[in-house]
Image (tube, rainbow, N blue to C red):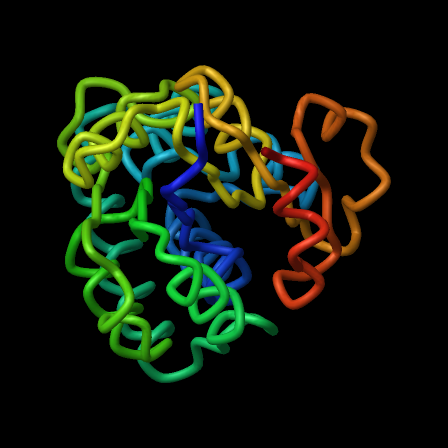
Length: 219
């Protein structure tokens, strides 16, 4: 089946927000006497805030009555940090223009809440390109479950097998592959040589490195 749709993840791929998410989580977790190592944080990258907080609260035996409060504090801090300090990743305008010129339908599927998605669309200047967005915020299951990608494809009236996904996290890659979509992984430079990216259809060091040759390899 011909590829005619591209769906992008957001955090860490389009905007360098992962350090800001980690910073916000660190600030809130310190209130509960918890400090995550970099390795611990990376194991839950790509999860929704609810799942992220729940996972570590259970790990450190923190009472679940604090879950909602901690989640709200993290989300409030992230929105503020992204608005003030969010940096657009290299190649964002290029890659959206690349696919628009080729007539692709374009969507965005993220674990983040819709209010953060809308903020990033404006910060990155890509609202004009994006025809559908999908948030996993209120889904029963978030990434690595494929539902957020399937929902975005449905909004775009595309079959999953017509879609290419761009991801930066392991959980996101698994979600895209479980949705039966092609997956281009653009991991953080510190994780570029990680063997687990072998499940992706293509691995790149930057969005700006994607070109016609890469697209042909995916067809």
